[in-house]
Image (cartoon, rainbow over all chains, first blue to last red; front, side, top):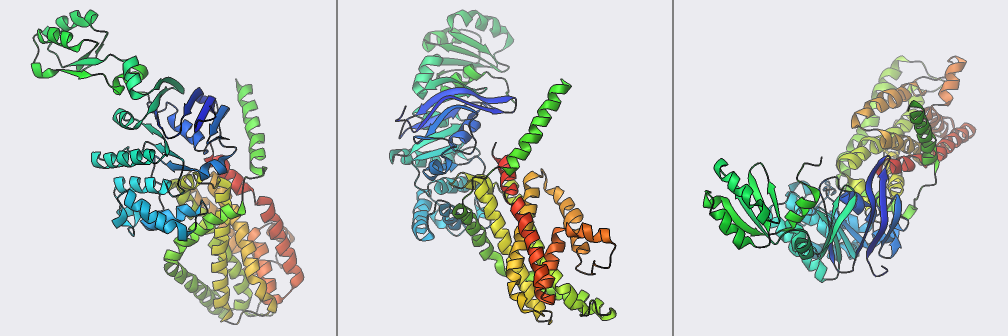
Length: 308
Length: 277
């Protein structure tokens, strides 16, 4: 417990009558990437805000870098970096000035922060945008600048709230690459995301939250192994005359899901089941076999209905 | 059910009072960091911003002082322009601070999400509040002293006590920073500033004894006027710049210090209440 960078026990957050976080336990080890997954309204952002000392916990225990969160907020925030979900850069000044101004909040003088800012701009591939104004940057560039800004105080713990939401694939891969490189340098990463691929790519361990509670915890691989079948057969828009045949296969599968546009068969032996599906009068291109994914775990735990 | 709701409302009421008078978690060096941020941004555009500050006093003093003044007898033994100039210095201090803590702060807080960014650094929201008050006081100091410098070229300075005007301007600016920032911290929409300006700032501008003396008015007017923040600032400036009546300057300054002191923690605590959830 004491070696954890972040540790929570019975952590609770209430807003009036509404309980957003309902007594959760977790711990984040040093130099790991830890993910919070969950649908909107699961309590991820609230949890992150408590960890980043922007919001006082209502109950339970929360220590960050060995200090009680919120109470020791100033000291904790000095050693922590935060990449917010929304861009909140100073629009009136240049890219480099944004970094220098931000560093001053940590009592870092422009003399020290200017070379560091230049270094970080090249780290996030923005060195040729040094003197640009913020409005001229694309969404991806702004996000990379936010990552650079969060590193100005050389944090031990970096908190990222949906770091790649709204980015194109190129920008997303660049951000991932930078985050992995930070982890190699010994920075502990904590992120929330909606993207299962992002979580699989980056996280050593993760939790899936739903309605203020942690449902499961583990590595992406453990979660896939423990909470969904190894293989999935998807059948897209089967014709009506094949449905009886598909329904007959249900007992063979571990689990079956019938959605508006497709059937899903979760199974341990994909090849055997695939042969049976192929025998039905189906367009071969509408059937495919894939491995179980984190997204299957996520959806089976949190449901398919819209939660907002 | 209704009783429960009343009890809850009552609790909120008392909780609100306790919230706004609590001791804020504020540190001056941290607040200064926000001042530096604002100054760095202002420095980029100050040439653009400061030019109107020079024109405004000219326009007022020409139109009201010389234009209107030409049709008026002397007021209390002095030219009309001498009478109004100190009050306009007080107004400049009020406007300088008020623009900053109303529109500018609201835009930073609500649209730019700048306070959220700063709150993830070692600064607290209370540090941000104090930093904004210090900065808007600085803006009022720029406004007010530029105004005085221009006005002095019209020969309106009649007392050596006028050297204390920058201190008086800063006090005035700090008072209106605390009032305006408190308003900013509670309004949900930027449109509410229409009320602030048309029902608070503009009436004060017109009825604080800047353009006509209040001492021949019925007694109740003077009683009401004593409670008007800008009126006290006008008395203070007039005593320093025109009459040299240091006794009444001290009385007005004391009023401003007491009111500012009483309000000082309110905007910080209201911002805390709004942004720390």
